[in-house]
Length: 117
Image (cartoon, rainbow, N blue to C red):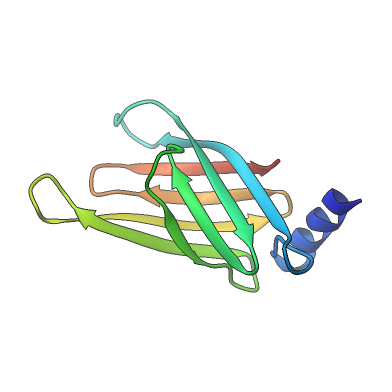
């Protein structure tokens, strides 16, 4: 029942929760659009109108707000090995039980394809 409510909410409003404490977890892969390596796992967790995205399911976390239309956009900027800013940017949208969009770093652009779990 709860899963059906979550999916219905996401379809109608692009949201992922139906009340306080609700959490939706989307998992899948980020796939490079050029020769920058292999596909990697990724996870997006939505709760209380906020999201946390972990590219490569590692320790880096991009956080932000979920817009009313299901758009998620955020960035994390860390110092690169050359001590210049290294920006990692997520631009995606939650539609139904899927998240699609892009994840971009200074070295590569990835296609994001995640599904509700």
